[in-house]
Length: 186
Ligand code: IMP
Ligand code: MG
View 1 (cartoon, helix red, strand yellow):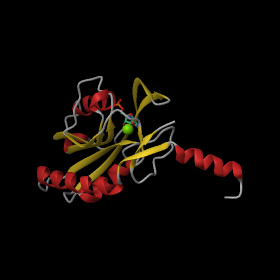
View 2 (tube, rainbow, N blue to C red; view 1 turned 45 degrees about the vertical axis):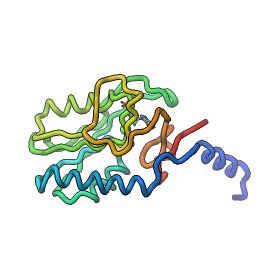
View 3 (tube, rainbow, N blue to C red; view 1 turned 180 degrees about the horizontal axis):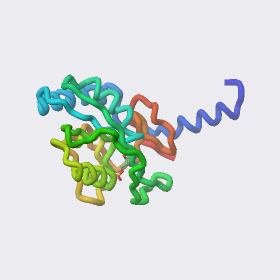
């Protein structure tokens, strides 16, 4: 890189990736296992995988290719408002599904459960629409941060109270394209 300002910006960007918490291999192994469990639970019955954008888009892409039951995919967007790395507690559904969930076994595919507010709200909303069944799979779980009573049916990794980035998760919209999960640090 010839431009010193660009080189400095890149160095600063990379310096926030403090340490790898979950490697690419660990993620892929856990997804293969979770997909097997989904295949066994639904046993050929068609499912609707519902991903919560944006954070879960990478997990969704890998999980949907690992399951073998007939599946459709759908997207919702829920925003929990952050000031820096601190959740403000305001959750808003900004994009809804176009499927009528009353015809489906729904599996919600989420990136991380932190305070639990986002999924509590999304699950309550979807239950009112009478899906055939509803389960929640999350890539990451930070149980020590929970503010509302909510548990996923399946969490691939339980992690301590660190702000994490990568594999779909962002800080200020950056780092979503990392192939692993890392701890973010100023
Ligand atoms: P909750 O409503 O507090 O459970 O927060 C859930 C949402 O906040 C997740 O879907 C993420 O988008 C975001 N979030 C929570 N913790 C982290 C983190 O450590 N890194 C990046 N995003 C996070
Ligand atoms: Mg999210």
